[in-house]
Length: 253
Image (cartoon, rainbow, N blue to C red):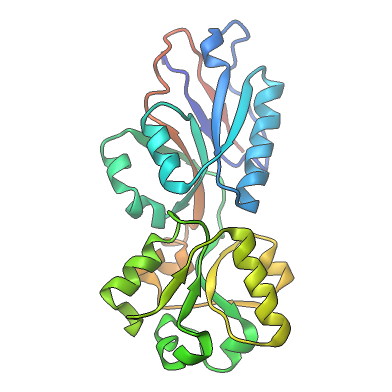
């Protein structure tokens, strides 16, 4: 295969380099990766960078927004994104996958969650589903805390069309760190908060959380897990196949 193609799967487990040519074209050595500032992706990117550096490549990470990441993959300005949370991003960025400008290469994590969450004391008070939120609108101040702009589109669409009777609610967009600061503040006083949570992430160890059911339309079934395969995946720009002298590298378990 005449491609400079990187297929990244389960980088945090075992490395099996099936092919690596030390004499590859210099243009193939640079591997440009997106960093969204998410704790989990930082770990995955760092692991990938260590592996790639050991193999003689030159990985770099750029802090970007989610929308910009996909545009840069399409525009050949990035090579790899290791935070393609499925199925929600498959739908949100469907056009990129349909036109083959970005392709999903492999699953690098199973058993994940990605949907709205509340502290357990809020769930114990009766909020266990998206459909319970509107009943307690005043307790939540009609706010849902999200992460950076560009990553909350399912929530924005949910409010716009009025799903779960949440017309008039606000999605507070900031960053992962700012969102979790709000969670820390409210849980300290036992106030109510609903926010975008995911697992694995240290937040699941720091706080006693309950993930809300009923968000299949927004984030997919199984708490954003998509039919038993909840997984961030390795996504890569399709045109990383430009150099005929570049060999193929596979990372696998």
